[in-house]
Length: 465
Image: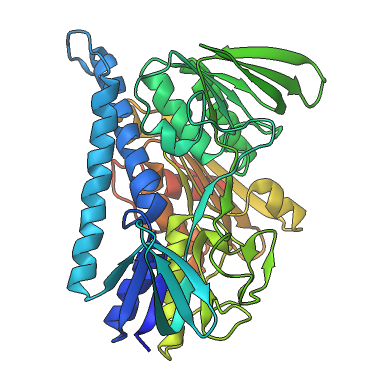
């Protein structure tokens, strides 16, 4: 065997799995056809956050008077914002190169395809092919933007997230189809720098439709206040691409009423699809369902020695989930006894402003599951730190099982809440009760006090409301 482990794909699942394998003494290689770090690092998590930070700084400058600061008019330089984002991504990719050298991981440049006999065929950009063997092969090829049949992506007028991060010029108007995390983040960014944004979401709940209904409603109010138009419970029937404009025919799912929306650019953000084609999975007889690879709790496929992690397996398509899956997969291969992931305790974050973060059940899901609930909500308008920061929008909402005090779900919208949600993940992991959370002293003044106060509100002990 050439290697103990070959990992196909170097995203947050693949590169983390490779580093952990090397730490555990295994000779490791990673196959990558583009840049190390995968979509997340190069075109997703990292560069989008750089763009969002630019938008946030621009908003701060435009509202400097609110903080007692006089400043001349600010202008958003779209090209420089895009360049900064790309520079951040490139720097992070170089960081992965360093980690691979440090951990003696060999990079096999090219497109990887599984062949029989625990082998990976790697074709480089010049068409040259070389085959490598390994005791174990982990497939971590990630996902790409899902293309809707009536919204054909052409990369010019109808674009997906990669192109949205590298447009040559800022559009004056944009329609964002899909109001999940990707759609909401790009809508916020482009609206903040002056693009007129219309958001079209199929689900009745509207923005971030998988979040708690109260969070979705609050974000909708804020986005409308920021100047965005939100068309919820609506479907795009067709897109007509003209020389300068795109015309979308949008139908309301409830009323049947149709409306036309004319914009410069359409951003399709209607989910993702797994990259499981042309990887050789079918050749090996690996079982799949609707394009997703079927695995057990330690990411074994039905073929011994072949594993799959990340966005190509069923479950949340999130970078931190892929990384955790990669570590557990490798530790099990190494003969350790890792604890399987509890997929009911996965944090979810959306990085628009205000931010959204959650873990566990929504209130509706908890009721549907038959729990008797205690629900507490604490608005940031009552938070001293939020008032001082000029960020009073949003709230913390906690849902407890009334019988045992278990935290069933936590939902937050507001300033910096993506940095706060890990506390709730730990609370659920450690099976901490609502009363224990109330008695956990939180520093003052901080945004995190709202977690303690929301818990207290659920038990009618809240002080600052």
